[in-house]
Amino acid sequence: METKIWSVSASQPEPEIIKQAATLIRQGGLVAFPTETVYGLGADGLNPQAVEKIFKAKERPTDNPLILHVADFATVGRLARQVDERATKLISAFWPGPLTLVLPKQKSIPNEVTAGLDTVAIRMPRHPVALALIKASGTPLAAPSANRSGYPSPTTGQHVYTDLAGRIEAILESGPTGVGLESTVLDLSGTVPVVWRPGGVSLEELTAILGTVEMKTDLKYTHYAPRAEVVLLQGSTVKVAAKIKALVDDYSGQGKKIGLLLTAETWIELGEMVEKSAVLYQQNLGSSSHLENIARIIYRELRNCDLAGVEIILTETYQRKGLGVALMNRLLKSANGQVINV
Ligand code: TXA
Ligand code: MG
Image 1 (spheres, rainbow, N blue to C red):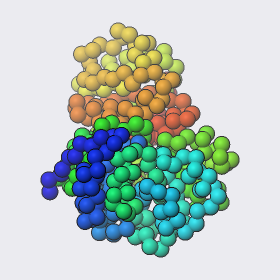
Image 2 (cartoon, rainbow, N blue to C red):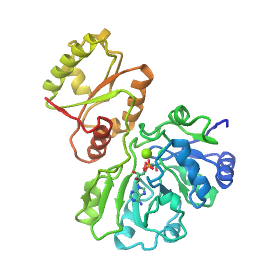
Image 3 (cartoon, helix red, strand yellow):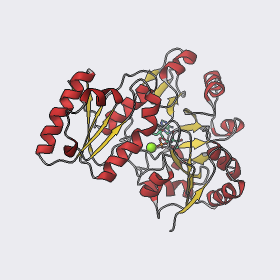
Image 4 (cartoon, helix red, strand yellow):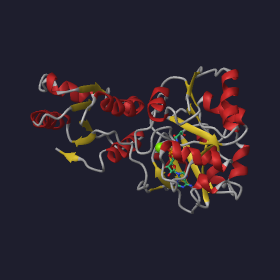
């Protein structure tokens, strides 16, 4: 199949293009679209055959459930069996936005969506293109991130094309996404709220409304990993810089192709210590005091390392506060849980 790419305005999506995309969805096809977090791969969430195609296109394990995306509040009541006061409060505080709520599901939701669970994940994205597509389709959109399973999520239409060209009907392209990391997944199906995945809405923001929140982030399927090996360094800027110099010397001596994804502070500390010719790809991620900027570009940079042919990525850890919790969650998964303390 040939994958169509439709350029669409991020702020005022052209109705004719949205209409064509919605027609594909209603026919049971797959359309990738931007959200404020990452690009999603959408299908009619109430059509089991369409939902199955998502798993095939992404090579996603079928026991990993999908999020249903809605464009109005009323639909939540048709998808969830119970929307309690906690859910109502969170919805009015954070929707549309990067918060996914896991709620007891209605029987009408296909098992393909929920992987047979008794709960369903629902979110209302903030992106005008996503909202327009959901409305025009007239059905909730089941949509995982539009990457090949295991790989970093796509933050541009080009990333989607690289991963899924020939496997999906179309891509709505409207430039890079804003948040850059996925939504927070919060389970409200039990007495204690559980965060399964930290994301665009911080734990601090959730705690302010809910009181206690438990975090259990050992989801089975979330790697966010590039092909290159990711080495995560933790410590003072001075020590991290010194370790990077030593590792670059080591790895380049072994003929390894090195990528450096470092903060502005670490680059300053590193100065001329690292020999340019020993490094295949490098990027300044900006200051560690602006995690929102780092979150926005981190997946793009992991992908860029692969495109350049990097074999080992040296990068660093962040304070686990605010968006730093989600950023560290993804980096740790991409580094297979390993951190080098210096
Ligand atoms: O920001 C996002 O959430 C993006 C955009 C496209 O909306 N979507 C996304 O979907 O990241 P996906 O499929 O890549 O990640 C959804 C996560 C998975 O880790 C999945 O296991 C979890 O949500 N999930 C879905 N339904 C669940 C449920 N009923 N209970 C627990 N976890 C669930
Ligand atoms: Mg994903």
